[in-house]
Image 1 (spheres, rainbow, N blue to C red):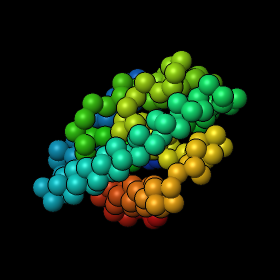
Image 2 (cartoon, rainbow, N blue to C red; image 1 turned 45 degrees about the vertical axis):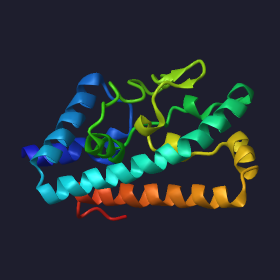
Image 3 (tube, one colour; image 1 turned 30 degrees about the horizontal axis):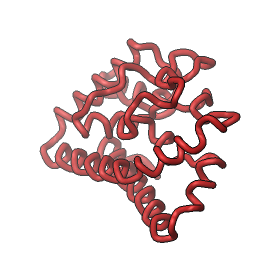
Length: 182
């Protein structure tokens, strides 16, 4: 198989978004790193710009989510962090590499029934800007109760920022795979 075809297969979202061995995780990250360093200046600048905007929005959201977690974590009967379907996806990796930051050492789990490797007693050990996308936007019922207490202006800004993150994630993904359909 041609190396680029093998890379595309390995980085298909359904292949990344699942339990991965550390070896496969490292392969995925090497492919993305090689793509980014081998891309034209225009593409790599655009990828870095998308990542910067995503990071800025996540940093704005972080204090709100932190407050929601502090309010609800000990009351939660079914922490979403324990769901076995929470994984980094390909766009998460594109974002992290474009941000030029440290990459988490492994996928969220290496076996289907494992708990998230980044979940500690008081919540996630990863900074919000390094978490899988789903962990940065999901509002459980307890979080939603906190969100409803926010001033309407804050609620609108929250929603706007989530939409902006989604937009720039799609743009970042299209830089890697311009033929993708979204």
